[in-house]
Image (cartoon, rainbow, N blue to C red; front, side, top):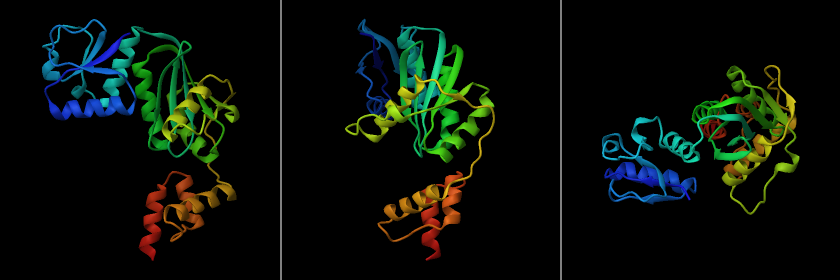
Length: 253
């Protein structure tokens, strides 16, 4: 089985690489030398300085990319040995911490969770560069309407077909962690066709959505604070985070 290798004498860089690999539950082998590399090691994560010591062509200097995650994405792609995919489907499970999945030619390539709806477009741009394809499609779950529309509106500029999918049957088991559940839901969404989005969608929250955000503010502060409807509206429209809204409420009191 093809495996990732990690070789660097830079302790700080090594720690950062291992942290990302463990978080993403990726198998790896720590290498003590750039020589006599086991045959099962197909791609090696290293530093720019040490890359020249590795004879294997499939080595990646992680410190030359904008993030370790980006370098690991490229390493995973190299493991597949595929240069270009016929079709890529990007699945998105909308929410305050959206899940994203990439399915290429019927193979689940990657599942990730991002910290906010605004980071979805950046992540998808990066992933589509890592996994080049002849055709690409974006599919997003129909729930979390305001958050979903915020994400869709940010993706319109990519000029990639977008579909809204009925995600009713995509909810994974509650036994898995939230991050993993979001990724699994996104993977399921990527495989379901939906209605096409033609233009920007409205950001008009319902009373229920506003009350839900207010309730979240109470839960996070153990009942001490409840943000106003006006501030909850700003949170729903992405103008401020819920944490910022709560801090704003605290400052008033």
